[in-house]
Image 1 (cartoon, rainbow, N blue to C red):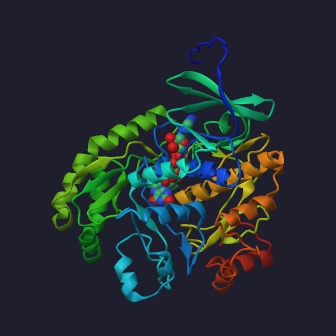
Image 2: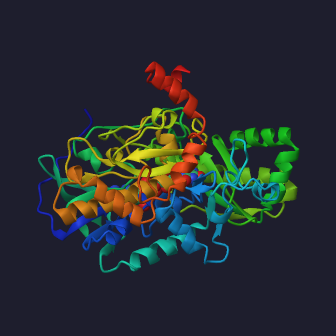
Image 3: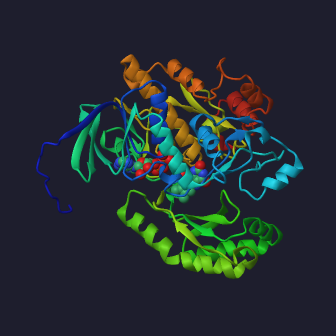
Amino acid sequence: MSKLYREPAQDIPVFDECDILVVGGGAAGHSAAIAAARAGAKDIILMERYGYMGGDATGGYVIMVPDLSWYNMSFVRGLQEEWFTRLSKIPGAVRGPGLDKIGSEDPVLLDAWKALHDCVSRNAPHRLVRSVYFEPNQLKIEMDKMLLEHRDAIKVLCHSWGTKPIMEGNEVKGVIFESKEGRKAIYAKVVIDATGDGDLFSQTGTPYSSLADANTRSSTTALVWRIGGVNWDLFEEWKRTRPQAAAELRNQLTNLAGFRCMPLPSNQNDVCWVNNWHPNRDCTSIKDLTETEMNTRDTLRDVLDYLRESVPMAFREAFLFDIAPQLGARCSRRLKGEYIMTANDWAFASHFDDVIAWHSTICQINDCGPVEIPYRAILPQKVENLLCPGRHLSADDVAIDWLNLIPQCVGTGQAAGVAAAVAVGDGTKVRDVDINKVQNILIDQDVPLPRNERVDPAYMQCVEEHEYGLYTELAKKARAESLKDYRQW
Ligand SMILES: Cc1cc2nc3c(=O)[nH]c(=O)nc-3n(C[C@H](O)[C@H](O)[C@H](O)COP(=O)(O)OP(=O)(O)OC[C@H]3O[C@@H](n4cnc5c(N)ncnc54)[C@H](O)[C@@H]3O)c2cc1C
């Protein structure tokens, strides 16, 4: 047994009390706080360990969201689309096909957008997809502005690290946190764990799993950095016309860095971001986090030099623009909630009465078509007064790769905020919340949901007309034969 230190018991000052405490201000937590305020909650605290909101999306420089639309309909709306409506007023802050162009098969438009990954559908018929690239610092500013618009309802605590849930039996009653002011407590009627790593739910006794399958994208960490002085269009042209050289470049970059890394486009043609994948890393391990930080910085000059030498037409003037202020965490602890999403939910187009988001995703088995996410995927087992939206939601090792993207974190966060507001307003537990009321408020907040007469019927027509993509035939066969697992095909 390793050496232990017994911490003396101590009284902790109660810093505050509130109706809804959101811990973590990333895509999920920020959305939860905003949605709760707009659903009528008046007493919300949003706690964030760093000095800004957005998590991976701003501090981690994860600067693109893919597949917000399917054919001609934008399925992912709500707060996610609001980010871009707002940012589109800032010159140069966003780039991607506009909502009025999605689904277009016009060859001129397809040609114009093909250099930007995921802006054209991967499968035929090729069509424009709502995928958006954004400037992370502008998003940081905009996320603050959204919170300031609700300053009467939301109190923001930056540089405050939630460390421990306050439990009474199986009920969460608040959170202990650390800051420069020391260790303090906040009591809350509902706690939303939006830390991405289940920092809180993992201490409540609710079931959860840890690392994702080592073969999935989720078991890798990253430290993103950006290159300036690039000509991205020329780089795309170079890759397209020299496929062998491009494959060699990919291998060489991996060899030089010691882990896979890849330049990707951004919101402007002269800047790219370098995504990277350090394999088999746990972003709750101090050792893995430290090595990800130091190994990326140790090798990035070599990667940049190689790009300059190998593709001078695009990288001759390239320079290190900046390094993301925080490490990119994809996955670690994951909730085993009241429902665990699996690939079957895409393959067989599962219908859920408690659907809270109906999202087109990056999943190829249903041609990136919409999938339903149930409320139970953010609702923990056995524990009360707690919701867990964002990248640690309840999904198996395969499904998590399609669900922990920014849109799904925003969408589940928005739903968690609304559900918490409804529960507090009605005086019920989040487990017993009136789900119809939650769905109606989400629809009012511009979230399209399936089989709902208040939603534009064009959504149901779209999925029916396109037979929910590839999976319909599989689903029909499976249902006919009462088979359960899509992998049998
Ligand atoms: C390198 C990389 C590339 C990716 N590529 C894409 C992509 O191209 N497109 C896409 O859509 N998605 C992509 N993703 C996934 C996506 O960025 C994340 O899954 C998503 O942003 C997570 O949002 P979140 O709010 O759940 O978690 P996070 O963004 O991790 O937010 C959690 C927040 O909680 C705070 N926090 C954590 N612990 C505590 C604590 N104990 N107390 C207080 N605050 C705390 C953090 O500081 C952070 O602000 C990528 C991820 C990475 C890392």
